[in-house]
Image (cartoon, rainbow, N blue to C red; front, side, top):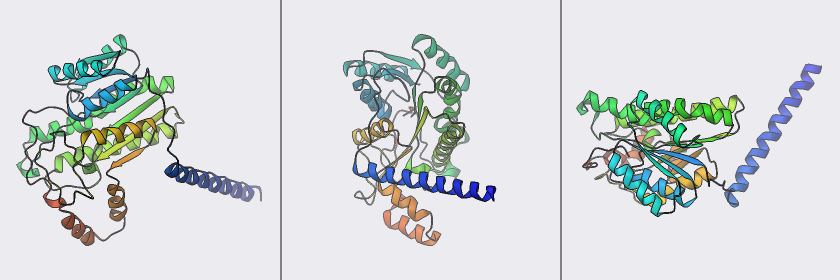
Length: 311
């Protein structure tokens, strides 16, 4: 009898908490969720030398954060540092680091801890794209894509997560991609790396949650192609539903999601609908929709960046 009562109690508590979380989520669809203050927070951005990374640095500079900028390209990274200082960053530091090299990540991470302090917001943004069909992609480029887009996240977490856990304070941000949600023709290696990055970030969110590490937040970002030059030449058949994103717009959405501590942010919102359809439609119907949206041909005109850089 007592075991039955305990079971009923657990069920009622579960239903009550579930209802509360659903009502809270609905409320925040109507009323904007409060944004946290990141002034003074140490924000590390990989791939800060250009594109999305540079724009993220400028946004956090305006918010009063301490910037730690990492990029493999020293000159480009120092240019970001200069621009961030002009935008109001009072404390900003640039480090040259190839995030695909584990020992280099650990070495520079130790340097950051000594010279700047404990990183509290880690944005894994560095990325490369080969833009080649699978059988045409050289092995070394494929390995580099996985090393930069996915494996680097492992080494960054290993370097900075322990201190976040010790402080019960931190935010892990994964810049994945819409190509980490659905496969794309001509992007097999990139999709593999972005699926892996998303899966890893999601698993680490579950791991910290299960261990009651409530001070550790996670945000996983999945944008469609952004006009940063990385996907130069790519096109969209349906710009209303799947537009090539303006970088400034994408960065505003990403920073807003971080400040509101959202777990997932898909840009544009049509991607949420795509994922809903993917969960139950027959594969034949899904392929018809993909063909109608022109998804099979988005990479046909790809030229990419003239200089090989980490985003």
